[in-house]
Image 1 (cartoon, rainbow, N blue to C red):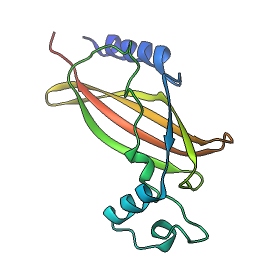
Image 2: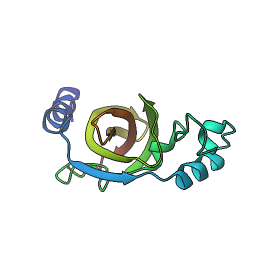
Image 3: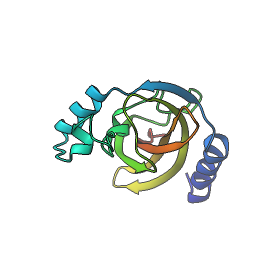
Length: 151
C-alpha cells in the first residue's frame, strides 16, 4: 500500500467510528471493592481505605479496572491480531463508593505507527463514567494495537 492509500483507510475508519457510543453499562461500586483495590495498589491515604473518612472515594486508577461489554464496535474491521497497548485514566471528580456509575464507551482515537514488522493500527476505546445525576467523573482509555495482516 502507498502512504496515501494507507492514510486514506485510517481517515475512513476515523470518520465511521470516532466519538460514537457503542456500549453503555452500569456499575455498582461498593466500598469493599474500592478498599480492596486501594490496598492492592499500595494506597496508604485514609480517604481510599476508610469508608468513614469524610472524603472517602475510590483511588484514582480504580476506573481502569472496570470494563464494558466490548472493546471496539461490533462492526469494526478485523485488521490483524489485537493486543493490549496500554491504559490511561483521567479523573475529573471523585468516584464515590455506594453510588452507581454509568459507563459509555466510544472509539476516541485511531492512528498508525510503522515498526520493523510493518504498519500497526492503534485504536483507543474510551469509557466515560457518569454518576446518576449525569456528572462526568472520569475517563478510562484502553489502547489496542493490531499488526496488519500481510497481504
